[in-house]
Image (tube, rainbow, N blue to C red; front, side, top):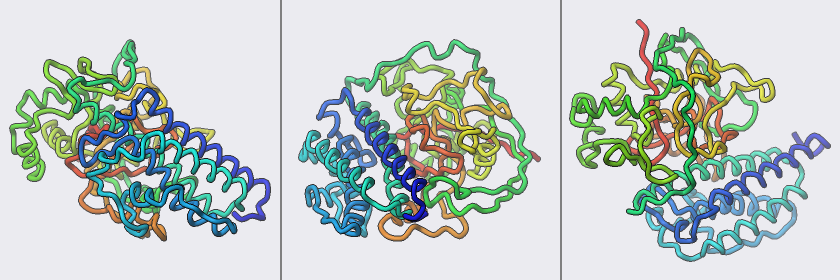
Length: 439
């Protein structure tokens, strides 16, 4: 696509501006009701203050979009505040110095008000850029990446905030709890068979995808069975009561070392006397809800105990791609409990939910650990420039998760989406899906 494409290209820019404004507004809606103090807490190294997230995603547009493209249009680029270039750089070594990740919580200045002013100023420049620029495909691609990058941080705002609040003895809630969720019959756990065979895995080239979803390639999948829904709290409790956290034979060596070192005896956020901490505060744990906030090590140990295993990402994608196609988007139908549903917590699998092959909860509720290491696909090439640091350099020592969660924006997820975390990570909405081989 180039400038000669005329009205069609102009419509693309108008749609991009709409998406930009919508996603940027969504981030600000997430902080409604929070105090400035809430927004600067950093409860652990892996989590970042809400204020930092809001500034960092703005830094992306200022540093990677405006700084590059304004001079190309004959305009002068002036940084909003030169110090922000280092303060809000995350891991882009090619851009320059970075404030230490573990010390983001000491940044009482700039204030939340100043960060919001920073966002507004960059928004004005971005909208002006979209109104004046030729519809260059490189610019459209970069801004689209920035929009999806901000959606990732919207989920991180919620998961990090949940961890921050969990460290407060008051166990404050972020939103009011919604009730009356389980008036319908629940899905019974069964295993559904899939023939497998040769399949194509990865992004097909239509619409946006991160570079780690490419290139599309062939994969051979042996026959397997997949559980109808995610492992529930009640099912995981059986594992605990059977001594799951005390049986070294169920754990990978690194996992067992982690259990002993961290004194794990239950998922993160489980409380005494059947309680659980959620983004709505403390409440009683619902047995039928999916267990979440478990590490890869815990998911793998549970699967061994249940005489099953975790799916490979090829098996998971094989099932996700088999869902009925949506006539409007020409993509596999994606339904589930996402950020827009405002539950902010995994929901029990209801028997009345639309399904295919009787498998539900493929998308939403909780990210599903796979047994696949996070590695490049055959023929993978990182993007050129600073954005090439986005995914490729992290392809070591991490595991792939699929499907999105209750904190993921609905239009951010797709069947080929590859999330990745270290195997000991538990603060994300991560759950368990079982599969079994068929002999």
